Amino acid sequence: MTAAQDDGRWIVHDERPVYESDWVTVKLTDVELPSGERFEHHTLSLPPAAMTVVLDDPGEHVLMSWRHRFVPDVWNWELPGGLLDVNEEPATTAAREVLEETGYRVRAIEHLVTFEPMIGMVRNAHHVFLARGAELVADPTELNEGKFQWLPLADVPELIAQGRIVNSGSLVGLLHVLALSGRKSGNE
Image (cartoon, rainbow, N blue to C red; front, side, top):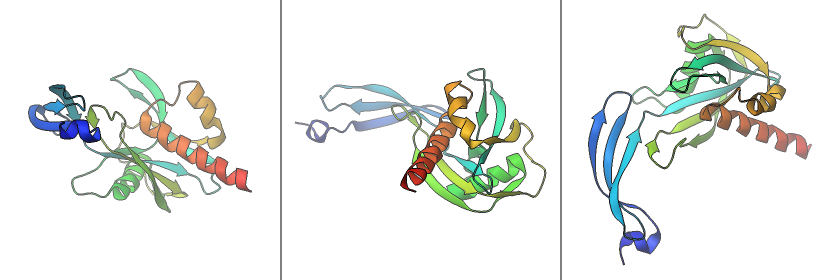
């Protein structure tokens, strides 16, 4: 019995790069399944990202951008966020991206969750944060991030149902915040 069969793990025997850039790395990975089957599997690595659910001081509105994404040719509402700089902590990225994209400086920021959006073949950690309160301190310096607006948090479930919020980071962050607020209001 192999180690893969013993504990249910897929065993990586080798990886070789097929394509590498600052944005993406594609590799062919020699893997062995728990059944003993062995084959080459494509893997994709992307830089980690951080995004932030920014709530206003009363916690009734969320700061989001209406923007176009050319790859899927989709318009949708998105949270501010972006890729981590080399050696940058995710919380630093989250606060920096809010400021660069919106001109708002967050007052307090907390980690909500880290998730992998396509865990079967893509390495791409997404760090999601919650900021409570923000102060407008400057004009945005990133000018291609769409138009940011304060949307009622109560409208988010309907926007999701209408397909107007479709990207994974925004969905995970917003649904997490809504679930937390539902737990709090249910306990009061």
